[in-house]
Length: 408
Image (cartoon, rainbow, N blue to C red; front, side, top):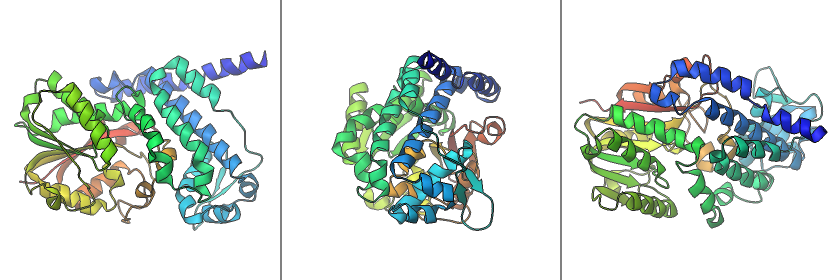
């Protein structure tokens, strides 16, 4: 009987909240996006947040931080007392504690100086598996996100103790299948950014089209979404050349295979490696040679965002467009569940900082994107959907496209 009640409670997770949020979003989103971000999507988002929260609690238990949290202190103090590798653990541990504080499981103690956290009693122990099973019943397309998060959680304690680098946890050859499934338009969670970006490319690219360069194309799902969207709009032939670039060789090969399989006769597809942290000109991208530079969840891991935006501006022809689809942090310091995974990457958590628009690693707020892009000399910066309006009524809406123009 107790098990039946537990299953019933899980089957109710997020339903009321999702109904309210979906109704609000129908008013605020363009029609094309409102069809994607419906009640089912919002409920899946809430279930996944619950799943990640339970994984976080499991990691905290496994690294033995409960007693330290009851004493309280800054993130650095607790990492030291917990025997973690402090410099590596600071960012992911800070994120975990902010995540738990946002859910009222911990208290963030007010005061000057670094944030301090404290637990008023024992932390709950909640099994993530029933949430995963409920998600499978509700919408199985999200399961690649669950599999990846759980695989990462199993190695998180070793990472925090300095026993294994995060890059090995995420990108060892045995993980490739997980990324193929995750970075897929079949994974409804990840596909959202691809669809938002594809719509932005259709609407914002110059009327005459031209050469489109994709940065960090990964396994090709973003490019597939763009090409399919342009084909539906009758604008595919406006792309004179689609330059698909990716820095990770295994991803580049898989991306090329996926695009060649879908468009075997399209000679305008060009493939190559490109490191956005090095001068584009040294890598074969001539100044003023590209009409559109496009990226999905890529620019936020640029080591020096100023440098990369400068290279983008130089590569664009006058009047050319920068269009990126990003996971956007609605408010400063707001924890986003994708960071549970990507905080393992040094490139994600430790970029070159800027006091105005790059105060920390990870995702940027809409205001930070506007300031960074404006400082790089772009004009006509735009964000779609209007996340600054949406966040006032749905404060955990995370996805948007950002566009800007190189002046003529």
